[in-house]
Length: 150
Image (tube, rainbow, N blue to C red):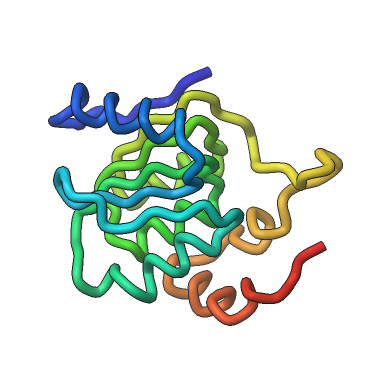
């Protein structure tokens, strides 16, 4: 099941960039217009946190390509002043957040929630992000994500 919130004014260019992203090794890419501002191959939420710390104060209305958009990533995308998100996988929880903050999204596959790697339960960050506002969630995790996770 694919999900799309309408309003993308440059679908062909974005589709081309999304295709390149999917074929590459990056886990996150952030663009302002046609300019690539940030790319990372790191996993989990670390790339988004690094982008927010290093670049977000200087850029608005960015385009984000992320391998997985759960609610945690959606909240961080709000903090990052994101205008449009593309991802091959997103959660219904993320869609609720993106709709609430009027962020356009293009998700290839939608699941109820992001699962842990072992598939047994909800991802800890997805669970931690429930009922949080973007700034509240960012402050909660910005210093904890550098620690090893189970």
